[in-house]
Image 1 (cartoon, one colour):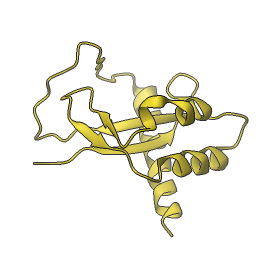
Image 2 (cartoon, one colour):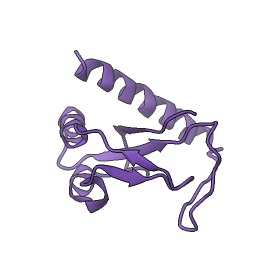
Image 3 (spheres, one colour):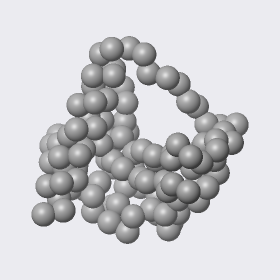
Image 4 (spheres, one colour):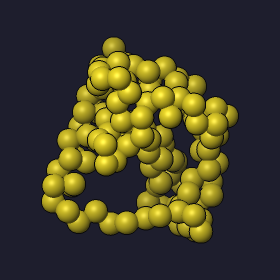
Length: 114
């Protein structure tokens, strides 16, 4: 079976939450968080707080928006929580932004692991 993963990416005012809000979110203070698609408990990386601070510093600004993402593996059945919201992204500009944010997050991850 595949495994879930957690990532953080640069956000926008429309997609993302202020870094300070992520740092103070009680759901991210524990060792695990529940996947909204299948209810599986996902391990939160021990370095998440430091990673959020590093990404926020890299992005600059007073309190930059950051996307927090739980990647759900394709081979795990989805049993969506009633509170989960899942929408297919169809707007070309939004798709381009998400690809750019993903690439920046990938570059950040590569740079921070050196």
